[in-house]
Structures are given as structure tokens and as C-alpha cells.
Image (cartoon, rainbow, N blue to C red; front, top):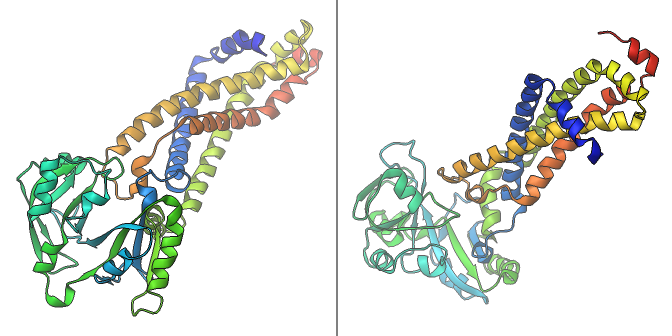
Length: 383
């Protein structure tokens, strides 16, 4: 087969326009398939980063929209294996325009950076956030997006809460997993709220002493509030993030159905191309057989041409995927796991293998039909 490679390449380039269209079609199809594979891997397969593997989220058992009493924090902290507990309150609100979408959370200023070592911030900015009540910190990607500078005033008009918060940006932090969030003090928010809305939060972020302790701690926290008026549900942070994604519907089924449609598209593209190739070369098959080429040799030549075009298309598709994924990683990310999306070596190999397999399978019938044509019939053939 290797000895036939120059022949395969020359045949592939014989009709340059058709080969180019086939490669482009395969590249676009495999590019979209690669994006789906990278997305599925980031959401459901890839392990959580080391820092995130220690984190859990405790929320209301019925719905994340129903708040928990702030007093739960001290009881959760006493569970063996719990290192830190951080109260979280989603503020929502509007910054200038409703289309400006990013995370806006009120947090415990004293514990935020002690718990999140992956949030890289300068010591002076961290101190300013912990000491200044109206201070806020933003992910660097978000600050760059709006052109915020240290000392800028940021006003959020409340929607869930009937207040407007006036914040001063005192720092920015870098975090590869979440580049689209603004954080400010929960004590400042409680000062603005009426009494009936204070001291209630939508969730607690819990840090375990080791990843192995996470299942046990989750169970013990939920058992702790089993008979409480407001019951809890504790789950790994990665799982918690996916609960919001599941609100959109059957995401796994949606991704699978698109992947199936793309596979069928690639099957049609290569089948059509190789059918034309096989029909054009019937007389050549007769000549090759006269020269001593066997049916298997001819079959290998035609299938090799299909595989070669698929490999070229797959290589271009993977290169395009890298560009698109790099672009997506810089966009405001609403679903945090997608910020870690990448096309690793395993996915590239699977993508190229899928492209070659589909192409060879689609070319098998026309290639077999041409290869088994008798010599006399092939030499008499005219299109």
C-alpha cells in the first residue's frame, strides 16, 4: 500500500477542482464534528481542574432559586473534612444594558481568595477588596471587555433585589476557568436590603480537604439538614454547573444528533465523489488489470484516494478547530466548563480516524464495483 502512495496522491490531484471541493467539504464537516467532540469532552468527560475537584456547592434541595439561611454556614463548617465555606448570593441586576451578560455575585470578602488560590490577584488589590466595603473585583477578561480600570465606579441596577449597588473596582484577578465574573461584598448587599431579605443566600461553596472526601462530606452535609425546615443538596461544583445546563433540555442527545447528522453529511460527500471517480476510471481499471494489478490492488488504490482526501480535510478541519476554540475561550463564558474546552491529541486522533473510516466506508461500494469489472468489459466501457 505504501508503494502505491505516489500513485494515490497523483490520482487525488487529477481533478483539482473536485478534489478541492471534497477537501473543503470534509474540512468544514470534520471541523464542526471536532467542536462538538471538544464541547462534549469539556462538559461530560474531562476531569475537573485540581482546585475545582475540592469544591462542592450546597443549595436548596428543591431548587437553586430558593434561598438558604446564612446560619447554615457555621454548621457546615463544623463537618469533618471541611476546610472553608463561602456564602454566595447571585445578584443579577443590569450593568448599563440588559445585553451585558456576566456573573454578578456577592461573596464573603474575607474568605474568597483564601478559598480560591486559583484566583491570582496582587496582594495590595486583595487587601483593598477585603477592607473596602463597596470594593469589587473583576476577572481580567471581563475588565478588559468593558475597559474597566482600578478605581472605576460600577453601578448595578437590581432586578431580583430592589436595590442599586454602587461599586468601586479595587482589583482584577486571573482565572482560566472563569473569565466573566464580578464579585463584591455580601455584607454591603445585606446593608442595602430590607430586613426580610437579609441573611439568606442562594448557595454555599464548600472546600474539602481532599477530593476523596467530597462524596462523604456531601452526604454528611445533607444529612445534617435532613430534618431542617429548609433541606439541602450538596454536589461537586462541576456537577452543580451542569445542572444549569440541563435546564436547556437533553444536551447530550442534542450533541449526539448533530454529530450523527454531520457523519451522514460526510458519508454523502465522499460517496458522491468516489462514485464519480470510480465511473471515470472503469477503462483505467481494465488497463491496470492487463498490467497485472489484482482486484485487491485496485480496490486499495481507490479506497486509498478516499482516505487521503479525508486526511487532508481532517487536518484542515483540526487547524480550523484550534482557531475557533481559541476564539471561544476569549468570549464571555456563561457555562463555565466550556472555558476549558480544547482539542487534545486524543480527540484529534479520534476525529481523523472517524473521517477516514467514514470516507473509506462510503467509497467501498463504488470501489468494489469498479475493481471487480472484467477486463474486456472495462476496456469496452464508454461514458
